Length: 426
Image (tube, rainbow, N blue to C red; front, side, top):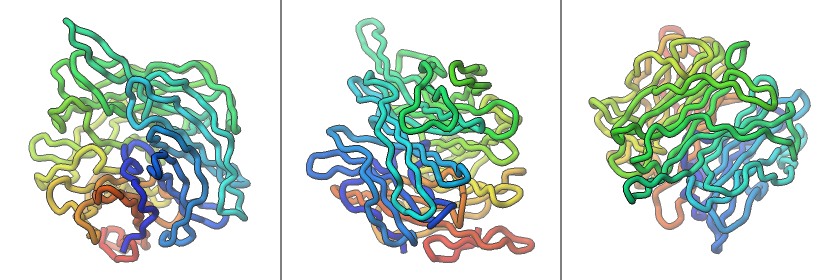
């Protein structure tokens, strides 16, 4: 059975699969950690929970308390002496009057389970910003990508839209209060005649010696169709970004409403290829993956491949992608939940990263009526892939935890895994 992290109004804890909320420390005591948004006694909280075994969870630290809901994202690296965790958080949607984008640095010494929490820093002041993601690049600079809300008035009608921005630290391996460069607009919204509330972006960093990373964001084209667009981050020197050319990756008909209601996540494998998982409802293909057609880019992609085509759609926050870099070739893990059929079942398929070939589906049934949203760790660093999800049990919306534990592959087959202590074949 899954374990429950918290019960109190955690509905936005697993918004936005682009953000990273759960991980396991590969060093020291190897605790699990989850970033959880809660609403308690009219106060919005952003809390860090910890667990020694993935079953029993306790509150480790409060990172934010205030009047507005916050969504956060983490990235971490081993500095050779301890685990450094970078955290960003902001409003859960880029909207008028939203609060700032925040930053904190956490340090987890090997002999401790509770992180040393750095001071809260405002990186971007209030001005319609939200949904931030954070990543450290291979050189040691830390970047925060976020969405900026703007409006345009056409023939008397005002349309809200959102554009992706990025900002980076001016120093390598920053501390608690780093300086930041000037924010840069990564992509201009391709239209202003369609609303694009709830737009979001996904940030990826490459190893090696090519482009340092890339950003994928959602918007609408001139016909109102939702599209995913990518732009390479060619270089960053602590002051100036060199960017590639904005490119449309794929279109989708996942929504006919006024919101950019599409789920996706992009990540990179050890060979420096980008991989993208997205939810689409075109031609009976409900969950699709794409692999970049060249190294170090989010601007050139091979044709989409179907992960699941069962004609049961997954919407916005019901898909998530993780990678196991401890095996060669690396292995992708796609998680998803149908939004109208068997909504209490978490589904998973896997594929090697060299030649994408998705396995048969495996499922875990939760003992509730509906899984609301899901979020998985970005990269396996120890043991298995960690997954959190909220339950659609209003008004509490509890948040739960699963782990996929990998077993040594056997000849002629795919990896067996253990999910929440239940053996499955992948």
